[in-house]
Length: 366
Image (cartoon, rainbow, N blue to C red; front, side, top):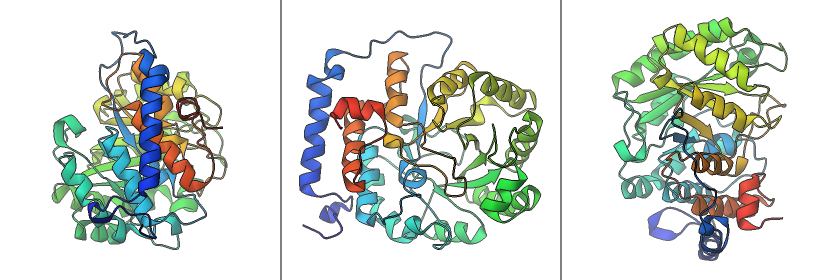
């Protein structure tokens, strides 16, 4: 048994015992539990999208706050299991300076371990041509965060096909997270986006603090629209609207999305990223779906937060999202039993139960 938990030549990590336990859990959840009984019952709503692409952020956003280092082999196994559960966009890591986010300092070591996973699932995925790039259109996508030109250099050297930049709608968070003003950060991103697009990469623009800021309070809708429009105009193929501290409500979501589309940002280019601080993440997601959004960020097991905003608690759990979407008859391509088993497996590595209610219900975690 390898000391780093890898599974040998496959390069996907995980001990044999953990794999067997997770498979057994998946079987129990899928056969004997509610999923085996045909639950949740599906009642499609014709006003909602028929298909949603989940942008899985667990391996990057979910793990970045963990104080204890997670072995690279375990991270690779986590990503492999997520892909095996049917997720076709899995954000793998970030090419930031190691001292900024020590948990992600192993990006160069991690990406080569993912080549067998990418090959098994038909990657690299699309995105550079502006297609939605979900698994059924272009295979597995493994985007990475790049904070600047140096980060892009490192990503390109490893053959990455999708990258993301991380902007802020507010000045205070821009300074705390990027040590720059909003204008200065956008100026830094512009050549990065241009070069990545020129190389055929898909480029996601994250926009944080879209609904509220822990230092500035309310964030005006027109302020968010202005920064989002600049990211769109510089060439980002997708914009993810972040409720970084989890204060959004459904009405706010609808107003912001209407303002963005009214300003010329196509809804097809928009994604939403909700935190569940006040228990609003699923309600906000439903509001976004009603506005035409078809890409939703989520984190397996509800892992994660933001290291630069202390009030940013866990992300929307992917399992909770899939349970709701299954009940609405919306296709995601995700095997919920396998996904829940994966999150239970990772919770074991982290030494605490998953915060996802769906994971805990399906895997009988206490």
